[in-house]
Length: 599
Image (cartoon, rainbow, N blue to C red; front, top):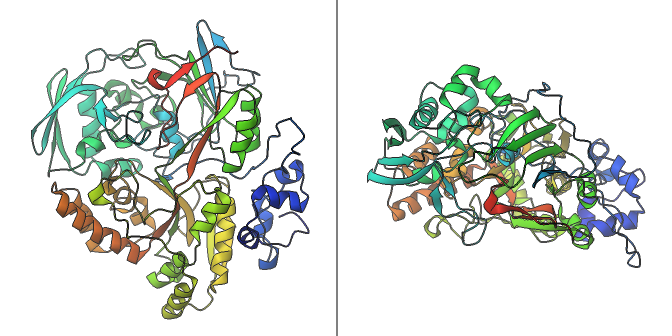
């Protein structure tokens, strides 16, 4: 908090002030914003709480043609899961021989070197154990699946509602539980080995074999897979134990990356996470976890030689620094651009914003195992107390969306219920608090302020909304995004739609074997039964009834709550022809990445 500012963020939001107006009215400089943080606000009493860390720099005078890069140093990286937070964050410096201090992207022969300013990268790259959003972002250029979702040729674009070939060039259903895949015979691994059926069998047998704690999420997604059989070097059959309505879509998701049999056996999980080998368009040549990933063109890539000679994911945590690097030409793409920076990019020369509504919720997860949080009426009250529309209108400039409960817009019509809502009802919240016998117990909201774009401001406003209905709530900051801890009462999180179906969202994140049930929620037996039935029923009407009951049960339990679908915005150089997609993958294959010469 900036000293002397005693106005609360919630009052300012309700007054209709934009964040630019707030900063200008407070008379803050860019330096003041950049050097103040949410921590100070969290250490004050209610009257002193304010959102100084997340406010942008004062707007430039209209008569000044110079583009000012505004500062919002707390609205940074995304990550799930994150939907799953069980990643291994090894700080070992894997390769110190790279240098990322060049002023501008360079050209290697006829192909440019692409530089991406990322808010964060993962701590390791094993595709089955790293299920973070920043993991998705980087791994999609390294690993591949048998089939993929066509993100660009879909309605609307970026949703990916069509399944097309990838490592398998065709497939056929032999019966309701057996799919035969015919594999490409022209695929090589990054180490020069040849891809074949042995790699596919090894990958899936690993997932359905002995339980591996680090692979819990991926193994849960493969619950319905009974066996995988090699027919010949380029033919495999996958057999499910029940008719699975979304099995093919599952094979295009993050749990289904194919790994190299011989190399993985040779090096093991830990080393593979630092020196991965895939079949994707770019191979890892240098990697310092949480700092930088250097990729190099896989020139023998089966889709053709990649358009970039190299790709560097360079961690630049501060929003202002990422925007500055983009505007100056130091990088080609900048991730995690908050809404109040979009105008800056629109007005700057040589760059532009690219935005898409994300298939991801910013979430709150409650620890129902905590003594204070066991009563679902208290959790319901905390959900009714949140004015999501106000958060969307003020923090996201109206460019986010309040979801219909835990439902994503890519679900088919029979699995999407418009009548399920997340209403703001403070009176109902107070009634539920009384029914629950809440007696002013302290409830801490544990948040990493730079983990998700805009969450620092949202968290502070939400705490004040809780206080207004009589909840004794306060913020507690964490130092890293992954240290929420099993003792957390309430913490920030996110959920993604991985399969265009509830099984790829609520079941992945809240079902048996998920971190939620392992650490935070003793789910009703009926919830798990419904999920299993939903995953083994082909009839659309039956699935609709099962999902309705499952969703209503989850909403009654309230182990967590969605806040909004954020607008995901990237800053992009005008030299680049590249489009984002609705999930956090960065697709850098040639059909979505092209370079043009500078004017």
